[in-house]
Image (cartoon, rainbow, N blue to C red; front, side, top):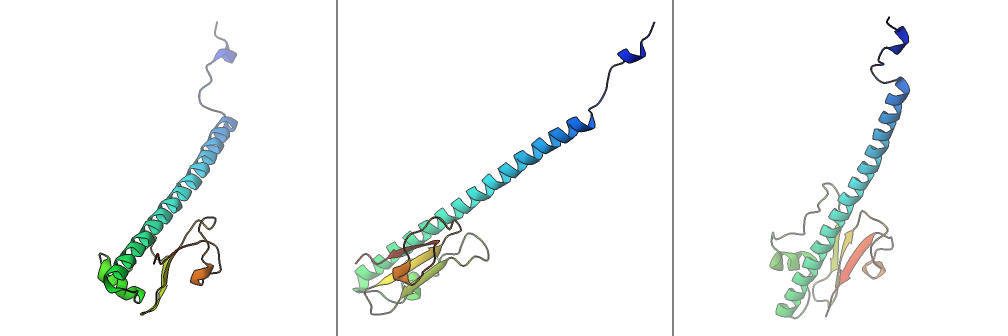
Length: 138
């Protein structure tokens, strides 16, 4: 005697599929956000390294020439590539340098994607947040 009600159920119900798809969607959203944040932090770390390299190059220029020059001249003389560093994010203008020939000061800044980080850039002429600046050491 075969019971019709004892057949094996095959497949998933619509509710079970919706729950699984919802969980996958939530995990993807969390993963995407974490990945985007990690990318921004990585690019900002590169920017900080770049302006530190520029500061080192400018200080070498000062040691050899007894003063600072316009930023472009100091970059050409002491940095590999003979130009300002290229930003890691295409289309993002991050680097700026303020310095004049015959002065004893310069300020090199990077605009960061993580606006909560940075330092006081007021002395370099930037009033907004999200800039990290280094000034002359001499």
